[in-house]
Image (cartoon, rainbow, N blue to C red; front, top):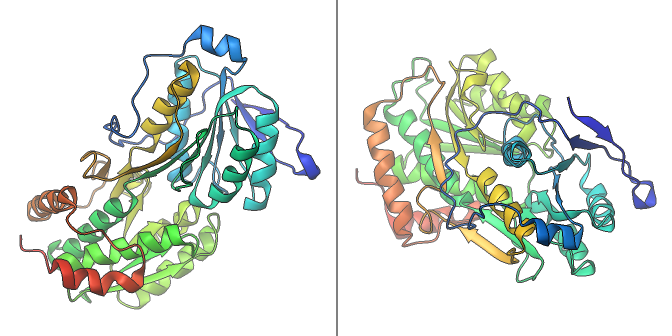
Length: 378
């Protein structure tokens, strides 16, 4: 059981810190650990370095969806749990709104206890950039956003568009030749995003491009929940897509995506998970999950901060940099994935690794991208 530690925040910002003296049971993920090119792993923390600085702990600040999303935040927390298992003390903070974040980060930095403060989500970039500039002796890291060349802030974008392109190709192939028993036969798929922000628009764009690359005639529906923590809205949007003929919907909505999975169960249709192996949540409905190695990047970056080798700057990792940075996970699903689909996905991975044309990050650019790359010939 985790103890709850209250931190006094400026301007009476309230939040809770889950003190990681004991490890909580987290979502198991089979994310590939092949992120050596993203961040070199240290053998362990140097006691002399940490004792001299007084900074021996790691702070993990989730996105506003919080823990229990079975996705982005839980996958990052898997890295925190690994650090805890190695004897490194970690504090986990769960902001309820993005407006709280800057105060939380400043409060954590003021303690002078943390070798590294990690914030999750592209919407954290502005806040963490301001705080990092005001605390030049404190190391920070933000996941899923790029902040530029700041010496004490590492900003990591780990294969986001590659992963979503691969997931889109998977959905397009399954709609085309997956022989799903409950397929509606309309050659229509969907994607539900959390927030209508550039980061998630890039998810929609890459997913759409991947689907149409392998299945040019498929229709791709898209919608945004407007929150990372509204599963009811996630379910409503997913159900609407099913009513429009979609058989498969991609959950790119964090904790709101739990509603996508519930809708798939209720309608007897299909969903694809993201940033965590969500297959076991509904084995008859979740046909696969896209997973990135976020946890491994957090572990290696934390160890670098502890041993004094941490460096800041943008770290934009694609499959061209590391072919294992993004994976599709099919374990724990009851849905049969045809060999023809998995074989084509391997060829699509080769296409992504070659990286001859940048994947679009705006839905408006998808058609131009497809005109440039043509269609899949597998």
